[in-house]
Image (cartoon, rainbow, N blue to C red; front, side):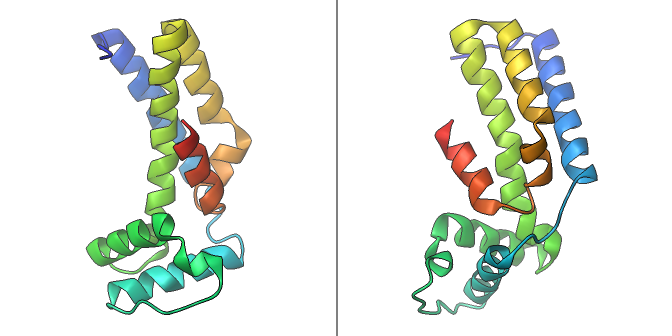
Length: 140
């Protein structure tokens, strides 16, 4: 179990807040056809329809079901369609911090979290490259 003291928690919260700001500033929205496929499938799921498809994007339930959940909860919008990917992006930073802190200490954890928070591909793709974000998150 990892216990964070107040100072470490505040620094992690500041890094996460900075990461959220950077992802909001550099949000790309829909980037390609995959996102449209995932969103269309998620929207169908919210209506109780599970279309049969041979295209792999339509059966990526690790993306489609959470997106459908947020669409059902918040209504269909670009925000709700991208929220799962965004949360994975932020969760990735927290997991990297905790993992690095456990292995190498607090200073390494701060550096690892900051590097990930500022990494250009993680700032611009939370709304664009869904599978990239989800695969990064699942690797940690």
